[in-house]
Amino acid sequence: MRVPGQRGFTYLGLLFAVALAGVALAATGMLWSTERQREREKELLFIGGQFREAIASYYERSPGLVKRYPAKLDELLKDGRFLTMQRHLRRIYIDPMTGTRNWGMVPAPEGGVMGIFSTATAAPIKRAGFASEFSEFEGKNSYVEWRFVYRPAASAEVPIFNSGTSQPKKP
Image (cartoon, rainbow, N blue to C red):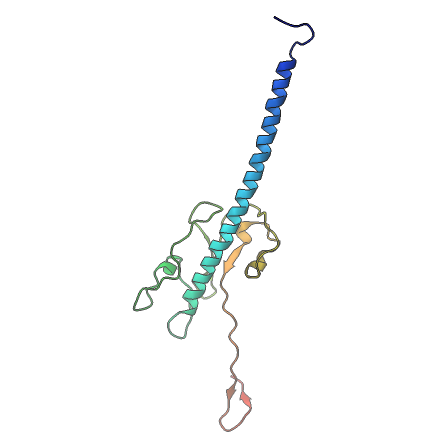
């Protein structure tokens, strides 16, 4: 039985409640998405640091006088330059931004791989407040610009002395 003057108010109230629930769900989804991206950024920083350390280990532990970078990332897993197998990295990590193992490579001037980067072109949420080891990422506009590169410290010049004098000789 219909009551005069109350036609459709329940229906309008229900539509308003559904719209409100939709807005709340959308806001929750946005927060969750942003938080997930922040977690993936932290994971990328950790994994990139692992690759940088592994490349540094490979380079610094090169047998002989000539240091070299790995020709490919797989050499970080099994370094056959020694009598016993050396491992600088446990596995080739998945890029948390793309979900693949397809990393961008930073080529070394003399050949090999001196660093890696994510191939994701999205804009990062984190743009400031990096740890000192990642300070070069400040203000970068894309994950492609987050390059995890090992650059050896410049070797200090050791003076060569002439025999019988205390003056250094120019090399």
